[in-house]
Length: 286
Image (cartoon, rainbow, N blue to C red; front, side, top):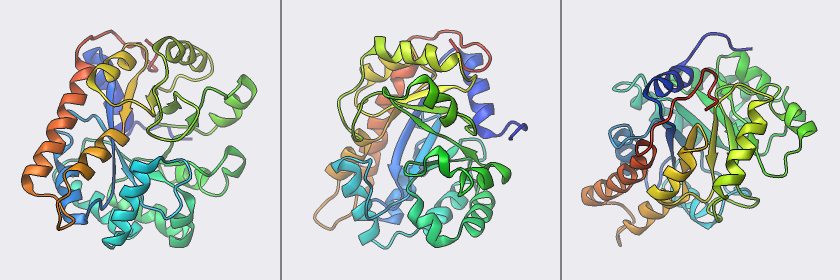
């Protein structure tokens, strides 16, 4: 069990003091290549991102929609590996030791890397958390428990179909925050209704004091603001990945103007969490 506050806990504590929710962005590491991906990664905090989810490219991303699938394939075609992704985090940490980074993806690349070696290298690089979508709670001994022992937060996905019995099992070893998938489906699907999200947030608060961030289907600043009013954070992924794809030129890469356009889009999305500020109680509950 993790008891010492890390970057994620400090970030949510600071956000509680500000009285607002977190803006969480997702990009795929190495999309469309490592050079442009690093430029975007480095610019996210200044664009208003509070927590970064960095996707680990994988050939069979079963929970992801077409946008993130395509991003992963672009990254892999450009030579991205899990070791290079950890290198991106390490270089990011040279200039930013405050912004939490959560790696999101699938177990296969980690298993191939070797769990012990991966966790040691992830800690050394400055990774704060993991979201591994294809490892259920029944397999906690495989990665979750070793990650927590190493000081890395292990973040679970909750869905509208997670009943109370399953909820207790899923959150048992969770740390950092809970990630609520507000729709039943793949990334990029239609967003969940604000009322349903708020009701789910209250149900989770009865079982856990971890902050709840909401993702899947959030694509505009208005949608971010809507979710930020009832949750502890809003995640945007597919819309940002689409913006990257739309800026890729015939050469297969982004220009500096393209990078600026992506970061400008992120800044607009991030403005959504700053429209209406509400006090957040200790533990994340509003």
